[in-house]
Image (cartoon, rainbow, N blue to C red):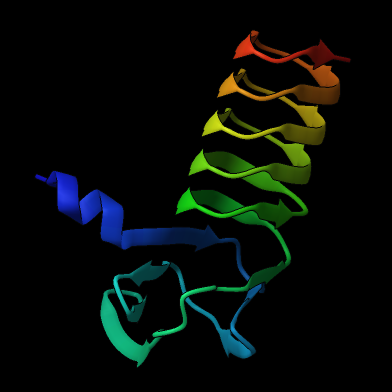
Length: 139
């Protein structure tokens, strides 16, 4: 079971689709699951590098099945499911749900539901529900 402090140190989890390249602070990573947890970069369950910078830059070249971050902005093309605790989300098509606690969500289309507690939601189309407590929703 994940504890409170585990969720704080788990900064990023990406489950990329085949052929997708993940670039973290200028280094390229490939695998079925890529994580930043504390100061470790983990690929397919094995620690393969360290990430000691305070600001982490992640670039995704391709589509991902699932993307989860605890903090930081997210920019991606096609995503299956996208969740962030604190940060803005900008992406193309999302085939599942999008959720952030604090941040704006701007996507081309969302085939699932979208939710933010504090932020605006903007998408050309949203198939499911769209909710924000403090912000605007525009389609």
